[in-house]
Length: 125
Image (cartoon, rainbow, N blue to C red; front, top):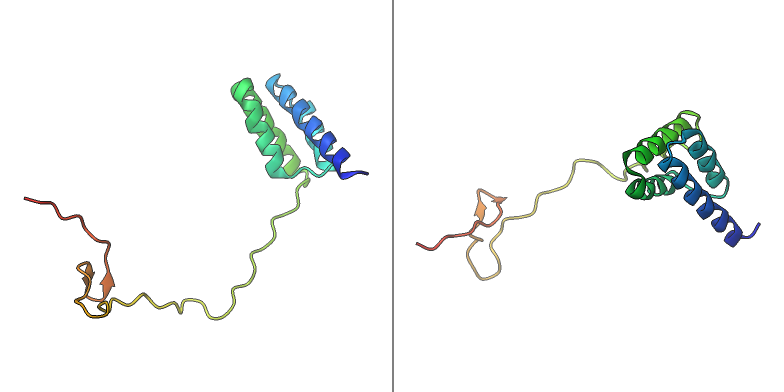
């Protein structure tokens, strides 16, 4: 199918699930979430549609939509999150920034015992 057609069907499913969520019809919300997913919708897009429906629909729309997302998640509709890539090199070898004095001058006023401290605001008497 055409990518434009897929986007059109997906957006229509978002609109319908927003209306159904506002009316408190969780089963219909789940069905239209599944339809939107068939046309490429992600979990994040579904949640955005629910948040948009909650503006006019209030707490009912939000709670029905979140419960529908939970049902889909329990059914395994969403791919599990991918693991983070392995860190390269050794971990824990970072060195703190040096508190050496700037070229041609004294150490910064906020340097103490080699630890950079945030500058303080001096009040005038």
